[in-house]
Amino acid sequence: MSLFSRLKDKIFATKEEEAPTPAPEPGAEVATEEAAAEVAPMEPVDVEAQLVEMEAAHPEDLDWRRSIVDLMKLVDMDSSYGARKELALELGYSQAEIDSKGSAEMNIWLHKRVMQALAENGGKVPAEYLD
Image 1 (cartoon, helix red, strand yellow):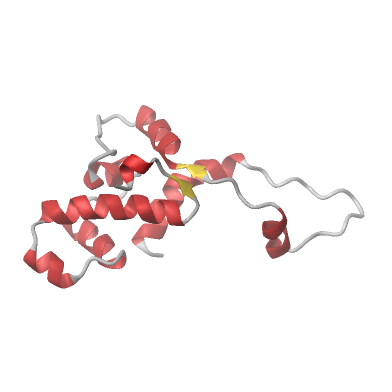
Image 2 (cartoon, rainbow, N blue to C red):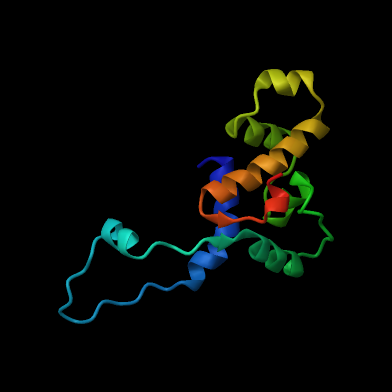
């Protein structure tokens, strides 16, 4: 599983757990998962609300709104330089950019790109995190 998929799953998990699948009525025809997805699209996950909820339960004071390190810590992921570099490469940052630019520039790009990727994958992300 990719690092981004793990991060997304940790943020989206609470929302998905809250939406129980209703049991079919006896004798009712059971639709396939694909058909059910077409009939009832999932509500977008409010990424900010999920992270605020996680923040309330976290023992550290984290600035996840601006820091990719703190965002990764908040969702209980490795936030080391190596992990951030791997995530950046996965999301389209090039090795040449890593070699020529500092880690601060990569971190700023990575935070914005993670938020964009969350939005692309069904997350409702405030515009301020995407600019």
